[in-house]
Image (cartoon, rainbow, N blue to C red; front, side, top):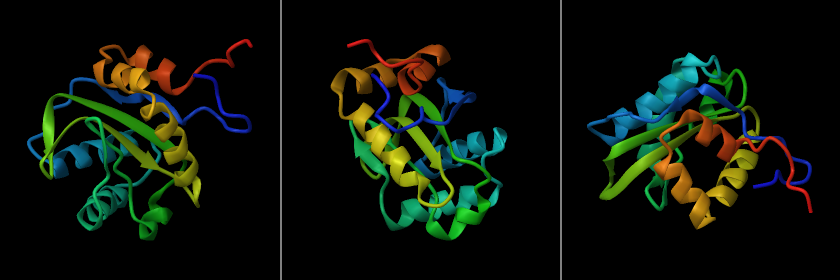
Length: 154
């Protein structure tokens, strides 16, 4: 997928990609996403609780086995820099009756989450890209999918 004109690649640190995660619950999956964002220095620990709070007010499940947990507006000061994480749960996680196998956690300063959500939606709305993300077993495949290295030649 080529980058959208005027947009940067998604801010994905390969250290924030975990392809064999296991969680007993939705909240545990969200905590793991938040911890991945903490581990790469994108957020402080307060952001994890804000992600769970967001989920309790509105589901971040977007379909096709994917959820995009993110914090509330009140937690913007817990965000150090924009970042995403990708956690794959091969055995799935019950997400309010839906089966989630991929969580893409988001942290963004200001209104940066709008851009991140729009770019993720473009990828996830393409059935082949969404399938590739759900089926990825190599970190490099996830990075290549979410951070294309250059525009496709016309």
